[in-house]
Amino acid sequence: MTTDRRSLAQQAGMLCNRPAFGLYLDARARRDKGLTREQLPDGTHNAEDAADAVRRACGVESRVDLDRNEQAAEMFRRIVADFGNWKRRAGL
Image 1 (tube, rainbow, N blue to C red):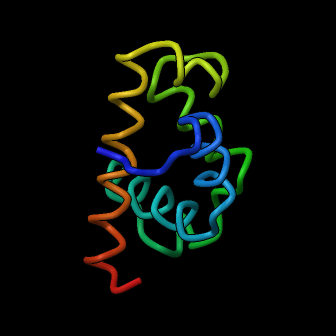
Image 2: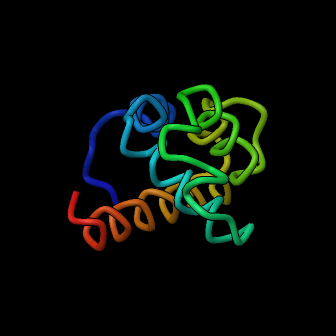
């Protein structure tokens, strides 16, 4: 559970602007699609791509919906947890 007092929409906005989150999305895309770093280099996913990915994964049209839809909120929390686990494994 997140202890951050900001709304989930605010948290999502901040997360999507973090360069490390873009790297996480790069790594996931390489894993999911069986690509190499040469085929999908680090830095491919920008903040807009990240926002699209979060909205798509959470099934919402706007990040503000994360504060209104508990299923979407739970998915966002899972994304945050997965990102944290990836950062620890990556040593970031």
